[in-house]
Image (cartoon, rainbow, N blue to C red):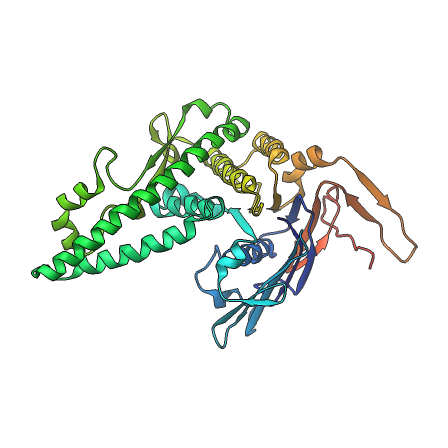
Length: 397
């Protein structure tokens, strides 16, 4: 899927905007604070029902407004929209004008992946961030996983509630025994499908590392940890940790504790790589998951990359531009200046035609393989990639 048109109203610092996207590659250039990240946030919000910058939805509304709207028209001519009324705290979801009750309905139609400075949490944010990354891919690739994970969490809550009970009665012990049996069965099922997906992810990652980090490819390994010791049955592990679980009041082992660790020469990858190399690895990992999602053909992902120039030198950006040629999905990239985008312009600039209009109309440059936009004070305008001083162009009405 690709976004053809984005419409925002009262969203962050963006002036009410209507943006026509390219189906492949889109660049948004502007100073810090101009609204570039807000644009990505609007797309992310539509795909996830939340922000990647704040947990407070009301903060997404423009100053002194009581509501905001984000909607897109996609490549299949479907209209997807979310609106938020701050005064009532209600969120309205629509697909082709019909009201929907669940955000997951939107997620089935629009898969958004993002790489921002916050994405380094994948390394430094602990297992929870890595679980979130893997499960996002599984939601789109393993169609039954969403319901499977929902069922597992229901059992997990029941077992945790039993652990917190005083186990001095046969009834409470029987109840814990029942939910432990269910918990072990579902943990094994979730772990099995997660391991299958993780192995596929690891195999696909190898090709993207060849493009982005070729000198390190053979030294990188990925470990899948299912959530309890590999050589022991979960029932045995839980039985031997009954006292510890009673002390903490929750399940210490199970499918909810799985992790994926990234290693370089058997050491944590984040301790061995430079910041730029870490970003390339994050991009390789994100491209890997995007490719797996695209293969399912239910929905092709949209990839958002914030501040492409940060941490990446010219050679890294050249490698990235080559990788984007292979990636079969729509990409939206932000940058502070045109200069950092030169490798992309050189690689993707196959066809430029200038349509010269009447004396009252400006000249617009049409680029076949990408579009470039200038963002300033919340205003978004089409521009020429060769316009180094960021003078915007005005399209013909």
